[in-house]
Image 1 (cartoon, rainbow, N blue to C red):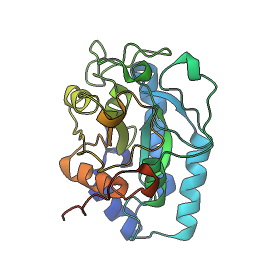
Image 2: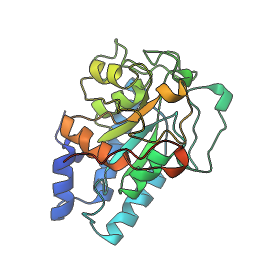
Image 3: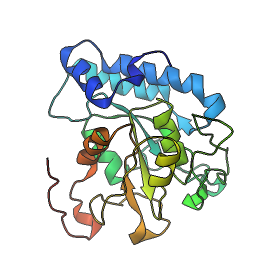
Length: 247
C-alpha cells in the first residue's frame, strides 16, 4: 500500500495536524479516496456521505487545530447499530431500511465533540446476530487481507474498514465477541469495555446489558485514545458514573 495520510497512525496524524503539515480536509479526502478504491472489493460500508464529511472537515480547518479535542479532524466510521443523526441506521436489516434517526447515540455524540469526522456506517450481521458479517440483508463484507475470507462479526464492517485504512478508528458493539473477534480476524485491535464504561444510549440492542460499545483501531494506543473520547458519564443511562480512566 502506498503511503498516504490514511495509513498514518492516529498519533502521527495528530502530530501532523498540530504542526500544520496536514489539514482535516486532506485527511478526510484521503480516507474517502481509499473508500472509493476498496469498497467494490470489501463492502465494509452500508452508507457514506462524502459531502457531509468534507463539510465537517472544512469547518474544523476554519476553526483551526484544537488540542483540547483529542480526535480533532480524525475520520472514523460507525457500526450501523448505532444511531447517527441524519444518517441511515439500519442494523443491517431491511426492516429499518428507511430509518434515519433524529439524534446521535451518546458515544457518537462524544466522538463528534472530540472533533472526529464521521464518514459513514459499517456493514454488520443483521441485528448483530452473526459472527461473519455474511448475514447482513444488504451485502457480504470481505476480509481486506484476503477477500476469500470473512472479516468476522458482527462488527465485521467496522474491523474491515479500519484494516483497509478507510478510517483511523471505528465504533462497534460487542455482546459475546462482536468487536474482539473481527478485530482479530482483520489484524487490528478491538476492545469490549467493562460494564457502564461507555453508555449504550442510542444502540440498537442485541443483548441489552450484555452489549458494550468499543473502538476497533490499528494499535493499542489508538484504541486507548478512542476509548478516552467515549468513556463519559451519561446521566440518563441509569447506571453509575464509572471511575476515571487512568493515564
